[in-house]
Length: 284
Image 1 (cartoon, rainbow, N blue to C red):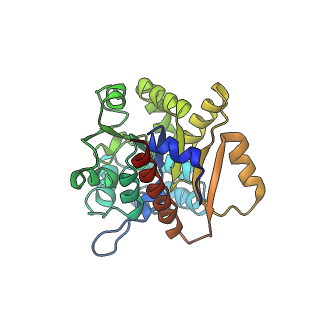
Image 2 (cartoon, helix red, strand yellow; image 1 turned 90 degrees about the horizontal axis):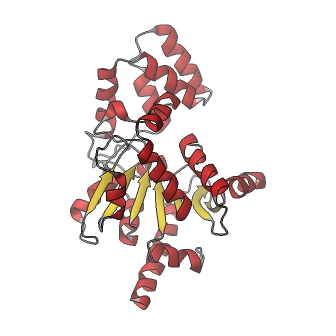
């Protein structure tokens, strides 16, 4: 038994939010076996279209040093907007990525809200083939519709925290675009802050290095510390201090699996699904 009974109840009562990171999409592939690019691969693809040799070399060096936010900053400043949009769509929209077991199992758990930092539309595609819920809505920062309407409706809601491939120039790729989105769409991010404050979060496929996620988690912990922990499915931490940092700074309990054995993510979620379904059947 991996999951606490208290968490199973929160998920069953739809008081928990799943937060999907890049790792959730990396488990997907097309019919010919092509997988979505990692963030590093996406940055490398974008950087190939930077025409200034010195700036392209600088971005390459930053990527090699794993200073990815800085690399994204350099690339975004030096790439033609039309070329940027073309590459984002070519890598994330045109390929027909098949949802993974991770996406399918989360759909079967049937949470009210899923938040994703990914630009792709892989999870949303499942709603077109699934009759579990009565409908769904998608909320992203640049939407004119009030995000509160999406959340308070009876529909399931997918929140695209960093934007969507449907609007490439509005996606959050670097710090500049992140702060620009915060300034331009304050109500959207206030709603995100509120959701993080009052719900249990389950991180799937996220490295938790995203500064946006860290900021929201820090703010919620400062505003209202809670005995209810958040959860993250992660590769095995090399040092105990890494677990303590996540626990003390962000109130996160890690559910860990051996390095490289990503099949455990789906297994963990399948156990949660089975127990959630059983709980709902016994408490209807």
